[in-house]
Amino acid sequence: MEFDLSWLLLGVPIVFALGWLASRLDLRQLRIENRQAPKAYFKGLNYLLNEQQDQAIDAFIEAVQRDPDTTELHFALGNLFRRRGEYERAVRVHEHLLSRADLPVADRERAQHALALDFLKAGLLDRAEEALRKLDGTRYQEQAWLTLLSLYERARDWPQATEVAVKLERMQQGDFTHRLSHYLCEQAATALTKRQDVAQAEQLLQQAIQQAPTAARPRIQLAGTLVGQGDVGGAFERLTELERHAPQALPLVASEMVRIAQQIGQLGRAREVLQRSYTGHPSVDIADALVQADVADGMPLRDAREGYVRHMAVEPSLIAASRWLSQEPFAQDGAHTVVQRSVEEAVRPLARYRCAACGFEAQGYFWQCPGCQAWDSFPPRRIEEL
Ligand SMILES: [Zn+2]
Image 1 (spheres, rainbow, N blue to C red):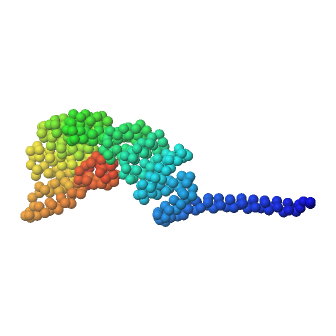
Image 2 (cartoon, rainbow, N blue to C red; image 1 turned 120 degrees about the vertical axis):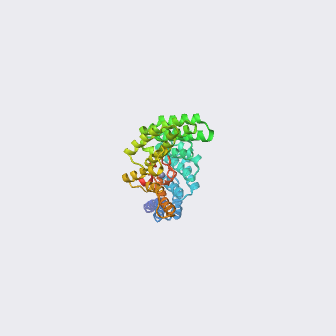
Image 3 (spheres, helix red, strand yellow; image 1 turned 90 degrees about the vertical axis):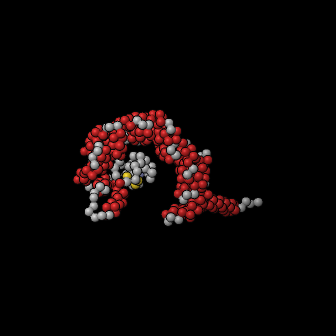
C-alpha cells in the first residue's frame, strides 16, 4: 500500500497551527487577567481622585482579590480604611499582611507601623503601645518612640515617658532636658496631692532643678511646697534664685514674691530683685508687684499707684491704666463703678496668656498647653505685652 505523503504534508502544519492557537489562547487569557488587576487599580485611583472613597474601596478590593500577592494595594486599602475611620477593617488588612510568611522585612515593618497607627487612631491605646514597642530596631523606631512619648504623656505615665525621653535623647532626637524636668515636677505634684508625701515631693523637685538648672518650674513649685510647710524664708530664696537661672519667669511670681517677702521682712531685697528685672525687661506684672511692695511698705495706694503711670510712660498698657483708674476719684457721682467695670471687661482678654504654638488662651499660666500638649509654649507675659 502506498503511503499518502500528502496527508503528512497537510497534517503537520495543521497540528502546528492548532498548537499555536492554543498557546495564543492561553496567553490571551493570562493577559486579560493581568490587565484586569491594573484596570481595577486605576479605577480605584480615579475614584480616589474624585473623592469617591466608597467606590475606590470597592475597586481596590476587586484588585486585591484578583492579585492577592500584591502588597502595595493592601497598604493603599488599609490606609483608606483608617482615613475613613473604619479601623477594624484597616486592622484586618494590616494583620493579614503581617500573617504572610513571604512578606519582605521592609514591608513587614511598614505593616507593623501601619497597624500601630490603626490602633492609635481607634483609641485602643494598650494595643497601640504593644504595636509601637514591636518597632524597636526597625527604621520606624524613632517615630515609634516619639509617638509612645506622647502616649505616655497623655496617660500621665511619667516613669514610662521618662524612659522613652532618655532613649530619644541618646539617639540625638532633640533636647529633652526641660521635658524630663517637667516629668519630675508632675511626679512631685502627685506625691504632694495624692500621698501628702512632702519629703518625696521636695526630693523630686531638687532632682528636677539638677536636671534642668535653667528651668523656672522646679524652683517655683518648690517655693510653693515650702510655703505650704511654713518655710517662707526657704521659699523666698528659691524665688530670688530665678533672677540668675530663669529671669524671664520673674513676672509669673513677682506678686507672690512681694507677699512672702513682707512676711519675713525682706521687702527691700524683693524690691531690688524686681527693680533690676524691670530695668532689663519692663513688664506690667513686675510694675504691679512694685506698687504692691510700696503699699506693703506703708505707702497709701493712692500714691503707690504712680508706679502704673511710670509704667505706662515706658509701655502703653490698658492693664496698668485699669489698675490706676481704680483709685482715681471721679467728678461725676456714680460714674466710677460703671466706667471701671467697662474698662476691666476690656482688659480681661489682654491679661490672658497665650500658647505660642497653637494660640490657646488661658486666664492662668500653663507649663504644658492644654490645647496642643506642647511644653513651655506659653511665654511668661500677658497677651497685651506679646
Ligand atoms: Zn498650644
